[in-house]
Image 1 (cartoon, rainbow, N blue to C red):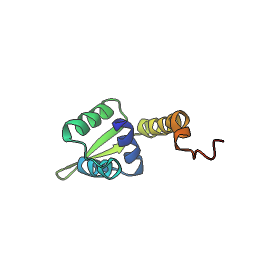
Image 2 (image 1 turned 90 degrees about the vertical axis):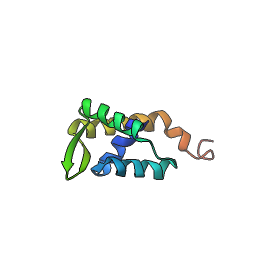
Image 3 (image 1 turned 60 degrees about the vertical axis):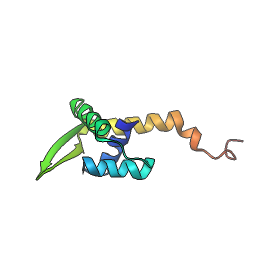
Image 4 (image 1 turned 90 degrees about the horizontal axis):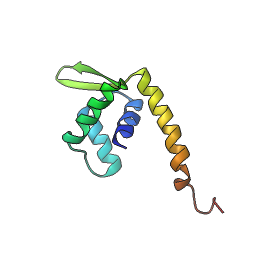
Length: 93
């Protein structure tokens, strides 16, 4: 789920690591530690879903073309697999 969340956040805009941690904390209520977030970012980079750009002292992460395709496909999959969970119980009757 962390990798999907990182891709989804980066689909909105490019961010550096601290911004990503802040955004995840807003949504989950807890901040991921660097030992969790940076290995996930490294894996996404290795899989060519994100790329890295250095701006001064900050490392900025952004989606690649493959990353945009991946986040779109993952969103469709999660919606198909789990979308029913978020439907109102009244609408399912």
